[in-house]
Image (cartoon, rainbow, N blue to C red; front, side, top):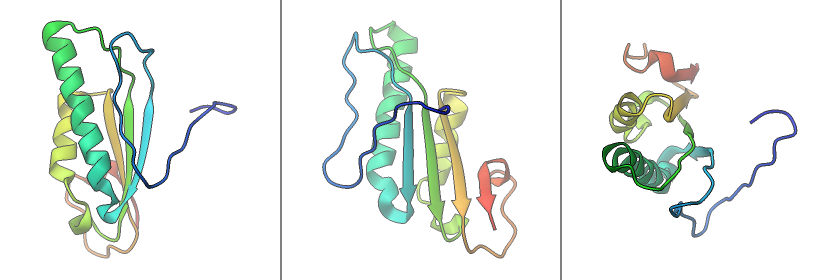
Length: 119
């Protein structure tokens, strides 16, 4: 987003991402903490499936980017982190993630270091 961008927020409850062929592309910003990643991880998998299908068969879905911001106390509490890193690698520039840890005192593994902020 840039200054003065219009955004829509949704917190809790029933929510999903189901773009239809021909819809204008949207850029998603997904924000999760702890186990709140579960529904958002499903959305990321759906986006990856659509990107994979789009690249493989040229469907009519026009997708924007997906950026995940995910926070936990430590990297050990970041659920699905290896899967998320795999999605980022498979769809560079289309799916990105920034992990934030709040209470970790030990060294962060090299694989996660470029994507982790916080203590």
